[in-house]
Image 1 (cartoon, rainbow, N blue to C red):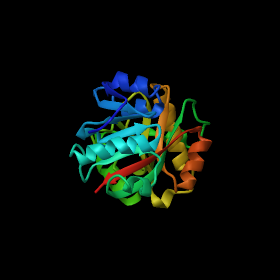
Image 2: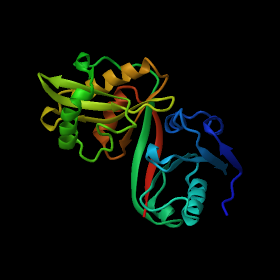
Image 3: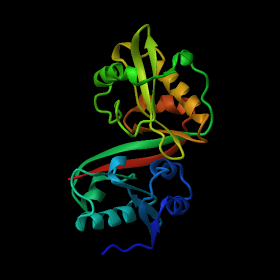
Image 4: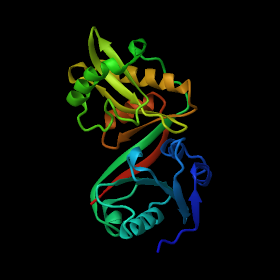
Length: 246
């Protein structure tokens, strides 16, 4: 049996319990009514399959892991699913359930427009006609990304062209109350020319026209990208661990 301090039903209840944290505002989609709980300072939730991760949490990692361990034990969660949790360690997870992989990343956000970047005016919104070029660029420059043309989580694609060639792209995956950038990449032969900064700044500026926060996720070992995002104003930070169940 899972012991919780409070069962939470619906997006509004979860957002209130999480003090409307930017990560919760991003993770809890506007058109979904998730169920969740609060336990010992942690707030957690389960998500529908089409959203990707099976669940997530904010607050202390230990209480969140305890509840998710119970959900693994009773069969609610199973191998192949993954969770976005507060920063934890493989050892802390292994004490409770079996994990296939653990990734460490940071959820970064900004509320202010970035400094203007050279080449930012080249950032354009792409269309479905650009999907073949997007597929080719993503496969060549960022094959591990989960953001690809046709993904229903994606609202729009943005990119930079060099002549008729697409040389940089990024996805707008804003489904909650926070603008969210994903799958940002630059063609290998075009790196080091400021295109990543121009793309990120242009997309951030566009999304700040619709949202009061814009966010993105970055692996903790991608030091260069983190330095760039900090320079562009992404100073809010929520350390995360993605736990893939075995």
